[in-house]
Structures are given as C-alpha cells and as structure tokens.
Image 1 (spheres, rainbow, N blue to C red):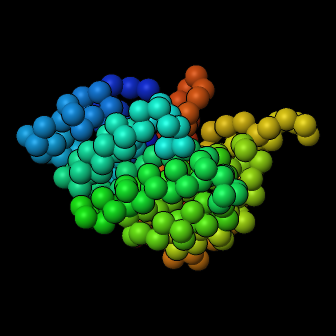
Image 2: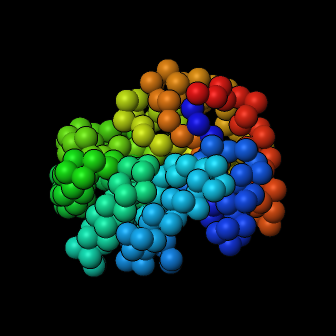
Length: 261
C-alpha cells in the first residue's frame, strides 16, 4: 500500500501543503476538486501545470474528491450534480489517479424504496461514464452498512463504481467496520486512514487523530490486504485545532504499520 495525505486536512494554502506533504515523506496527496482545482476552472494547460507542480514535490495524485452539497439521493439539482461529477471524473483521467471520491448519500436498506431506485439510476449513469472514460467513482462508506452498499453495487453492476473505505465514518455511525469490510471485499479502490473513539457508553464515537482511537489498525490493514487491496491509504483529519500536527503524527504512525510497495 502507498501512504498519502489529504491536503485539505492540513488547512494550508496549496503550495505550502505540498511542501509539508513532501517533508512528511508521503508518496502522494489527495485533493478536492474545488476552487482553482475545480473541473471548470482548471484548463488543459492548468492540468499539465498542476501535474508538473506535484512532480516538483516528488508527489503523485492519489485521488480527487468531488465534494457535494447534497448526495445523489437528493432530487433538487440532481442532473447538474451528475454532470459536475462526470467532469470531475474526466479531470481525474487527465491528472492520472483515475479515482474520484464522493459521498453519494445514504443507500436505503429496502430496494422497494423509491429513493433506492433513484439512487441506482444516478449511480448507473455515473458508472457507465466511468466505464467509457476509464475512471472509477469511489463511494464513501459510513451512512449505511457495507452489506447494503454491496447490494446496490451488485444491482448497478459496472466497473466504473467502487468503494472508498472510511473506517472512522462507520465507527462514528455505529456500524461494524469489519463486517462492512468483509461485505465490500474486492470493491475497495481507495481507503482513508481516519480514526475515531467512543467517548462514553451512551455517546457516539468522535473523530480523533490517527492512532488515538478505537480502531485496531493492525487488524484493519491486515484484513484490507487480505481483501486484495494494494492501493492508497490516505491520512485524513476533518476537525481539530492542530490538524497539521495530527496529519504528521498520523503519517508517522502509519509508516510503522504499512509495508511500502
């Protein structure tokens, strides 16, 4: 597996974040396709320049994240949202990783739920686009059990869809991450190194710096590898006052556990 860091977790301007990533010794970075790096703003020339900038810091692009205000289960503005994701997928092909991470919205457990069919149709359209352009759309875990997400992917049945596995998201939503990992084996195309801890018997788990939570990382990495996953594992931190220090500590923690490719 290759260790990466999510640039947005550092809370720094782009070039300084890239410099910090180089200093941490990660192999690559994950970035959000927003602002100057949005598909609309980044021309073909800009994409070549961005790749040159990454190479100047000895970094690869692990994946693009396409943040959405609403998931694909939300009907308002759905067509425009789908077109935006397609453009991010096109840009991901140009930039190399051929992986785009999204939070697609919660998959209903009941396939007879009208929201289930609507979500399936949206995912099928995006999966077909991924098949055409050679990019995989990675659906982030956390809002439903892995078995429920796997049933949706079985139904859509396209190589253009995969899974971005976020163990902390599952833990924070009270979902067994190891059962989900087993259910999604073979579909995982990207993974976060993201931690959480149960702070009380009747309270939900909360995000904490990597290595300070309840996730057994030796077990997680071992089971991830056994599922035939050998891709990126990206250190992520969504909150906290010392996010750069947390990312640095997380990278150091992960390097002690991950065998370099």
